[in-house]
Amino acid sequence: MGIQEIYALLLLVMISIFGFIISAYTIGLIRTRKHKRLQINHPEGVTTVIIPVRNESGNIIRILEEMHGQDFPVSQLEIIVTDDHSGDDTMSQVTLFAIKHPGFPLHIVHAVQSGINTAGKKRAIERAVAVAKGDILLFTDADTIRGPGWISSMVYCFGTPGVEMVLGPVYFFREKNLLQRIQSLEFLGLMGATAGSAALGYPVMCNGANLAYRRDAFLQSGGFRGNLKYSSGDDQFMMSAVRKHYGKGSLVFNTDPLSMVGTEPEATFAGFFNQRLRWVSKSRGYRDPVVILVGGVTYLTHLFLLAGMCLGFFFPKLLIISFLLWLSKIVLEYPMVWIMIRFFGKKDLTSYYFIAQIFQLLYVPIVGVLGLLVPFRWKGRRGIS
Image 1 (tube, rainbow, N blue to C red):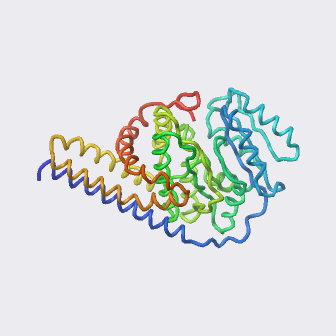
Image 2 (image 1 turned 60 degrees about the vertical axis):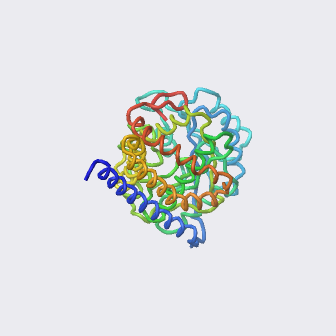
């Protein structure tokens, strides 16, 4: 057996494993969409919404207005804005908003100015959790949008016994250029994998822009303990910790359209790559075998496909095989992406599917390596998110 045959066989094995995973997620996603909720009442007690912020002067008033306009009972609500060393007037705007709305349960947690390693989103979240009154904690980012039923929808899921964590749907909006449309479409695929894997009881990802868990789950699972050296991953590490501590049925994906949260995609290639470098950087801290397996298979599949096509210039038969297997990957992924396209009402992105696949084939192998070697820049800081 020659080099071409060995490489082709290896690539076929990788595509087969990847295809099995994607097919399983697609089935899980279909089951999730058909599932009828059994919840009757949302839990009683206080719910705390935690909004970590850093230099969000352009967004903070909008999101506070959104929180003020929620249909959730104010008597059961607490909003905490926790600062991560903002250098603008974000916190003064929050203070002014609180003065203008004296009956609104808005609280401020200022950044710790002394001590070691007080910067970063995880530290800001920890400071907020320490003072939160809520039994249920909801998390979102200041640069996001949602409807008035967001809190009610997310809290409603905790009415099911055994649910400790709720993964909310996130989408990109206001796409203005080709790069943003590609990101938006790719992100729908990530949401499909999020929902499908959660339905199978082994979630592999979530998004901190729309996340909720019980306060006790944070405390009992250890919170961010052991992962603070990784600046990113406040969402991913908590997801794995909760599943490990409470079991596979403790996490659910919220399929209610009222729970959707939107955020804008990166407008430039520099912003996009820094975002992806930040996402990859936390992978060194993964300990969940399922997450490691799926991440490894996904990365190696893209790497072997790209390498196979490059080697195809020297081995023409390998180019054909690699191209055909890449097409099979595209076909296998499409049903999952299409379900999420319909769920989020993004049918206008369908025509960008093939372009997005080309872009993904090129950037995933590159970012997967650089994310472990090159420090990212995020909101004016190097290597800290």
